[in-house]
Image (cartoon, rainbow, N blue to C red):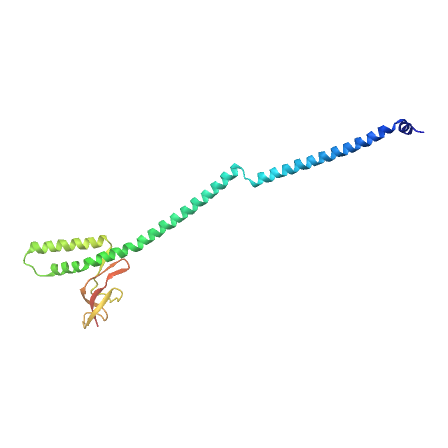
Length: 200
């Protein structure tokens, strides 16, 4: 017989039982260890998931910063649009307001012009009327208001209203022969059309 058989033959019966018990204990220990490893692994995974689910303080600050930056950019864009709109409205309103104010002064300008053209024996009085009329005309110029006074020019229905027609051999047909009342304009806006007589 070989040595192994001799050893086995020498082993008592109790030792074989102990060996089986040791195997069982080892198996139980191995199972417990594997369960502990599984538990530890699952705990780690849970912690990792929690870490992923809850952003860090730095990430929170970055997100908040991005949100505030977005709000700031939107606010700046809105303000810029408001500013442009306000400028455009002012540019549109100013000529209208100026034209409306000037229109209120036109009867006064007409009367000063008539007074300046009338016969007067008092030179000082006439000089005073001429000074006031000149001041009024200068004020109109400062506001950008121009007179429409075109005797001898071709009639333009955009600038003038023809109140009558006359025959005049010295003038071509459809020419402004006489201006009854001056017209005024502010840029392209007509404040008042001139009242004219047209040659036929």
